[in-house]
Image (cartoon, rainbow, N blue to C red; front, side, top):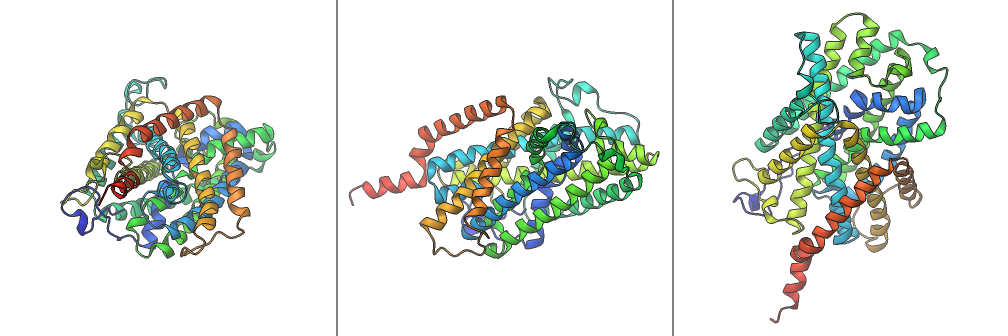
Length: 466
């Protein structure tokens, strides 16, 4: 996750360039680190009551949607290997207005998802404290208003720690994330092994009690679990041999994430009747305690979740800073946000801004509100990426591509259809809030970005008499 600048950035001025210092393994770990943790450690408890045991199919639907889109990401990442994820792809293929709309989706996705994951982290911190020292953070200081509390202090502490690590910069961030990824996968595989010892096939007897509608609704909720995959593409400008490594890292991360999610979901449902998931706090730790009758497995799971969710928050905040960095460098945001500190070699103003925004959301907004907003922003951004593949094939057919979407044009069309299907299943209030947010972003572009962007500046310069 290194954010090391090149020579142009070393003076601390705006518009710095980022050094290519991330290899394939670290890049795949960024995708896994941003993804594994969110769904399995706390969204499973929200999705299972919507679909029953058929939530396993919901994970499959969400994985297929993410997989189709990952193929589209892989092609664009290999053709346009820069920071900024789908914002940069939209900028290159669809123009400034579309890029600003996508940026609004990504800001919503990463800003809110970082906050949502931090809120879930506080649940497992309390579970760990309870199991080890017999105390917990008071409800008033471990929940947002509307969720039984006043301020979520553990969530804010997590955001501060991640901000400090990202400001420090250099390659330590990527190393820390990789270590946390290994730990979280080990803990989850331990859960699978123990949960399968209590597997009861009768828990799947009433497989889809809420029908196809329930499966679809749960798929929209579960999709929140796959949002971290596109974090791989936000590191495009810091990756060695990006045309080769970006597509490979995306596919590798998707396979690992999907296999882990399905193993944990099946083993958890086999060990506990689906009706008991509703309202269950720190669900996997609770299941482990019930299965073994001992305290230590629950402690291990809670500790693994604390480490795991730290990793997710770290990477999603990292991704957010790189998107804002790219937008600022394009003139779509004030130039301060693309300034690279000469000592830490990181975009410090952007990192601090993201940290403050995430901390406020994590401390004051309930988890269920945050999760749906993340899903709609992500799905719209995914749609644009799939459209971008089609557009770029037509407008720049000879552009070098390290990877091509198989089954073109059917694959990107299926990706768009799958995303629309999940969007339709979200609550109407979520869609209303999203439309309002998108309107604000486009208004900002009309009054600032359209006048200060590199494209607008180039056009003014070209129009001046020589």
